[in-house]
Length: 590
Ligand code: OXD
Ligand code: MN
Image (cartoon, rainbow, N blue to C red; front, side, top):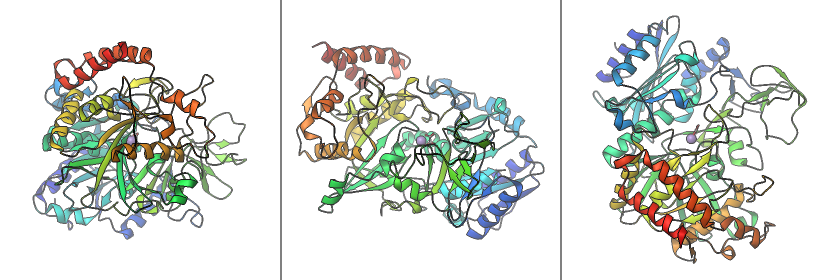
């Protein structure tokens, strides 16, 4: 095997081996040039894989429909394949590596016959940053190439960086027959390898994202002393021009993109506050020379949930989708060949083509866009993108925030007592499930640090890694938990969320600066209601108090439930977490 683009023997061997297995008719080496990508878009349109949208209203935008059975991540078909089953832990699905390789090889053998295999060189992070890592993904999907070219930094610079023998993460993707019974998303953390077969849904096939930047990277981070987290990163600029950064972990489809791009309420804007987005899904975090935690977003675009995104909820995300975006499984408005999804406008257009390709009217009784329909938008299109987005050093974190979707129990915001207690707070996160993964929606499940589906090794060792990291950080960020999703007796959300979350961020940053008091409770520090800015909100202090209240009886029951949950981790559970749990239980009984 030879290539005009690289002499790296490991790359050539990987491509050779992949081609021998899948037997494509042709191999195309992606160089990342606009010329090559434009030709692929055209080819995608010809084969029907892509639909060109109205280029006046949505320049550079395309549309794609997945197979009906292939619309979300498949957690129960996602495996960590390490030698010892125990090392994958009780939360992950595990398969023996030899068995997994054999299974996938049998499935993929000859499956690229009549197709082209594309070889994508990509970097997670800015090429040359100490945070960054290179991946090579081979795939038989033009859709994957075009999405990867938005979500990651694709191009020959990756080969230059690798040189003749640099190492990289191997990613093999083959659509095969998009057979859900033979769909596997396999991770081999000990071999830096990912194999994905029989899917074409983003989260399963854009291998730089969940597979590499979270599952493989979390394992690398543990071994190399850094962290790969399911976190957005945002920066708040104060009226005096100073900037403060926070990273926040929320489960999939719980508003990370909205928080990352929030527009503060009018009176904050008038005073000169500004929020800028560094990332909306993934943070790679290292200890800096100054003893603080520094974070980068390894991605280059946003793979966001479309439904609910509108001019009010997230004008920045919407603006980002107006050019160079690939829409997946939303509806098409045939009147002007643009896109629509539930929540984009109050009133749906009179006639649409739904995500299944069927004629749709508001009376159809079904959703026009799939609840997990997505936009893949270049980060550069986001009006509030941080000037630090391409920084090789990243941004220093003042705060880390955890958050879940909880109708009851968890207050709007609370602060952990210290780093170790913060790790406990992250480890006990629970949230109601969403459409981002297959399975029932709205079921409360544990999702520690929002990493349940993404941790590439034993979850208790991951907790231990957090505890160990704490020992290395001279100036650790403060750790908080938020819950935007408290409901009243009629099931209505009490807190308005979206831009008004600035009011909570404001309190969090004041706590970091030491400029506001807080009330010590059984679970940590909770704001005094008077310290959360309610200007112009129409929410009474009394209502606010109701969602700041720490109900000891509920928390006592929660502690019992956590004890049950923790049992599965056995001896590997760090002592620090056991102690925090014991403190919680005894605090609730005082
Ligand atoms: C995502 C997810 O796509 O978490 O970011 O599912
Ligand atoms: Mn995510």
